[in-house]
Length: 126
Image (cartoon, rainbow, N blue to C red; front, side, top):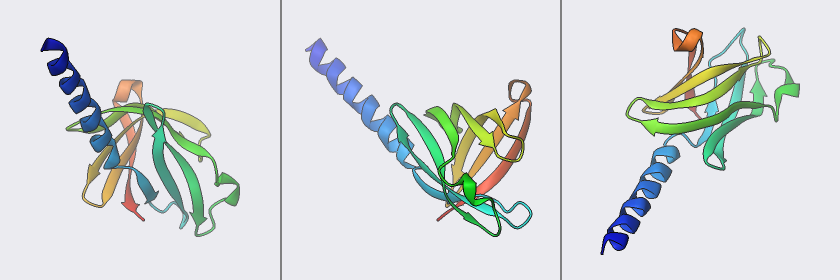
């Protein structure tokens, strides 16, 4: 009986984690920077989430298509996702990241100093 209850609990945890991830899977458009935007597709990559540039708009550098800009995003709680990193093409650096969803938008932040200093953007669903 204990094994059956434990199996149900494990299955419920896996299902809940899968449903939680589903809320940010898809393609998102970044905020404009000098009139340019990127379309980023967020997908499951093993046990984590990742995001790749799938299109550029408004004069953005086309060589960014295919670039991974989100990696290792794991864990979801009421506040959203954390534990991953985001690449900032303008600086050429990776930053600790967190993502939260509100309606058809996600707030994506890249942080330094242990999360004390963050630069954020609101991305819209495509």
